[in-house]
Amino acid sequence: MVKKALNPLKIDYKKCIIEDRLLQIRSKQNLNEPDLARVWTIEIEAKSSKPIIDFIRRRLQPDDPLTFTHIKRIRKKARDSKKLVIIVCSYDLFNSRSSVCSVLAESNVFFENLSDESEIPRQGAPTKELMLEWSRKYWPLTWCGNPNDQILNDYTFDMNHINKMLGSISNLAQLEADKGNKVPVVTAFVNPLEKDKPIYAIDRRMEGKCTPLDHSIMTGIKLIAGKEKKSNRTQAYLCLNYDVYTTHEPCSMCSMALIHSRIKRCIFLQPMQITGCLKSSSGDAYCMHDNRLLNSKYEVFQWLGDEYKIPTVDAKTCC
Amino acid sequence: MLEVRLKHMRSAVRLAKFALDHGETPVACVFVHEPSGQVVAYGMNYTNESLSGIAHAEFMGIEQLRERFGGGEELMCVMRDVVVYVTVEPCVMCASALKQLEVGKVVFGCANERFGGNGTVIRVNGDRCTGGRGYVAVPGILRREAIMLLRYFYVRSNERAPKPRNKAERRLDRNAFPSLPWSRYIGRESFVEEFGEKMLCHFDDSTDIFGDLVDWDLIDEPCDWILEHLKTQCQEFALHRRKKIKLEV
Image 1 (spheres, rainbow over the protein chains, first blue to last red):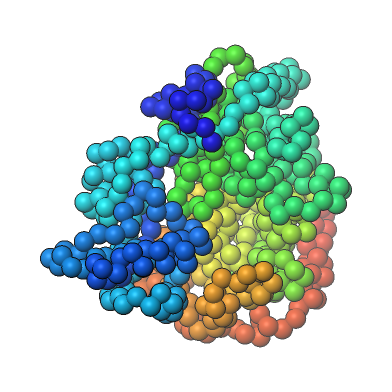
Image 2: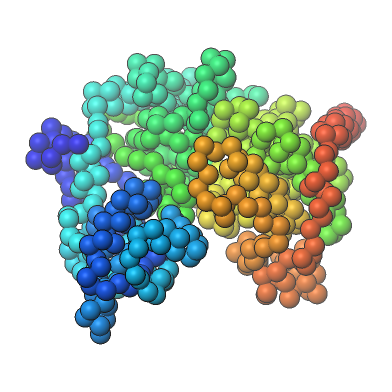
């Protein structure tokens, strides 16, 4: 992690574009509406705030899947200046009243009104105005800048490698088109531990023995599964942390297959306005990689430059 | 109709139990050729065995059909007449695959809370962006049995986890079941077509059409015979179809 000013990459934080080439793709819905999480709260006397906060930091925070850096943990109780309301932990950490009670008992601090009715945004707001609005509506927040700025700043990009991979898939796709493949879609899978050995996969649905489901991403995952099986390596997930480069924006089946495979990042060249499932403006706006209802995510970027030509496929084709 | 649905879903549940007994996630399906009532393919999850996160039951069924009928027009032709009986709602990926192959119908047991593609998370079977042909999905057939098999699986894997998170997650619940919000998966008209008007009270109350009954024998008895049984049925169908095609030619 580097400070924003020291990042060697050119990042346009407003437009979310890196090096004038990579556009970060996110769900529009996630930008202006908070993703809410239920939390446990208690009421305490103002004088007990230090011991209980110390206790929470030590005993509960390390295991809590939710972070509270964008939140003020303590707020005054309405119409009672001597009482404070404190967030103990997320509902994700403990879903039963008895569990929370038994942990709090260890603190020896007197508390009242244990409740799971409060909700807080899981992430900070993207603008100061929204931060104030969410503070009024849900729970007092702190302003530490647009959380996405930090996300963009923390991403790592090997631009040389990205260019090389995009060049390769673009060339392969052109070769496929020249050979008469009516769906010249190509995907490259890159294992972070073997960056110099990318695995290329081609859409095979038009070949005799194949089915209409043999899109490049599906054939690629199967290819990798076969190789891993032979090598006798055992990994929790097949394509864990892989980078995936593909010529055309994936369909609902393939974008979901990438979630199941636990990839880290997908970079695509050509948006598919009708069948694509990553961009907010594509298809039914599923934004599969950034869909709150699916509990797994991956990073997605669209290449904006025109360096890499790719053959066109019919607009209604699922890629 | 309900008797037919139950008959085939029982096979799927038995196959899921077989998967559980052999170290896999208990999700399974049978593909039934609706006009002849014959089983044409089956599948169970093999994500652990294959190391692949996409090795879902539905794909095993599709692969069996591809081996017998090839991947082209003949496969599509069979698929249009196929009803897929699957114990758990197909995930978004499988729901999309079945739509692209123009499956006739999907009948499932319980909802797939994390990845469901027939209404729980996304309703791919009726969307615009996925190619192929939209299909009706019928939820709630042997739903409690499907849920119980998943609970058996999670209790077992939690026992093996290095640090089980809390007691509530390890306890096997045999009594409480979530409600079934039918309208999330199936329209009122399709529901009536499937179950008859008398059952509409369940549609409106989000309750199971079989009441609180759970067929414990079905999910507790070992059923290693199910695999051979299904294999034989699939072979019979393939033979029959080949003869029919020859005659037509």
